[in-house]
Amino acid sequence: MSGPPTAAASSPAAVLGALLAALVIALQLPAAARVAQVFAWPGLPAEMALPGLFHEDDEPRLPWLVDERPPAQVQLPLAALRDTDLDDHEARGDSVTVGFLPLLLAGLGLVVARGRWAVAGRGLLAGGLLLPLVGAWLPLENPEGVGALGLVSGLALLAGAGLAHLRPRDPEQRGETPALLLGAAAVLGAGLLSLLALGAGASSDDAVAGPLLARVDASRPDDQLLLHDPAIVACNAAWLRAVLDRAALAAFLGMAALLLHLRSRNGLTGALLLLAVAADLVSVRLLL
Image 1 (tube, rainbow, N blue to C red):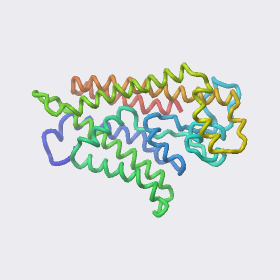
Image 2 (image 1 turned 90 degrees about the horizontal axis):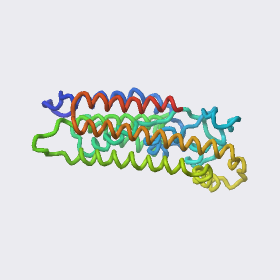
Image 3 (image 1 turned 60 degrees about the horizontal axis):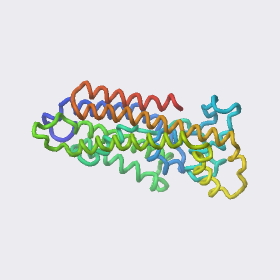
Image 4 (image 1 turned 180 degrees about the vertical axis):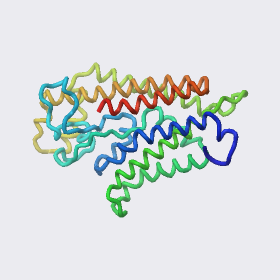
């Protein structure tokens, strides 16, 4: 998979890593290619972990929450966190993500992976982060979209390299520290998202949507009473709760699959891990 040909290069772990990278790229590059708003770019790292947080559509898909759907220009999640004019943006129905589990594995690949794939992943990741900053000086029609493609591709390759690093354990238990840290990060991440979801579920609509409303009010000094309409607040609070609930469920599923794989390191647990990633990424489209 990377570097000079070795026994590990053709191991089941390397094959699983290649499949994981291909899975993430196939399911997420189409959404990444449609990122075309300069103000959306700063929020992409958060969207990688919380898909749907920045979703925006002319017809919000929450018909069971309110009888009349609020107009697109007052949909808070994307517009508020972009800190820009609510009336000056394009609706976007895709959410760019790589999933909870690939993000963890990409962190592992970024730190410990070696070889050509890891180098390519690091290069794409750096390019994806830097391209929007210098896009004004480049002959590119959509530097944000190209940057998003590089970011998703780089994270996917690093996730594959991280998974390939999880080869069967050495009999003397050498080199297991990264795997232990990865498992701990999965548990902590799932726990944190669960606490956030529980906290949002136990809070009032005003408390959940309050930070977004405050940010919009600060960036828009003109009168925005419509944003404080109870129906609109309830709609956006419910959307944010749905995003957190989905993120917590995806994190728990990913944590369980990863811990099983860390324990066994075989093809069956690797296939289960890939199924967890696929379910996570496919559910983004179902949610939106």
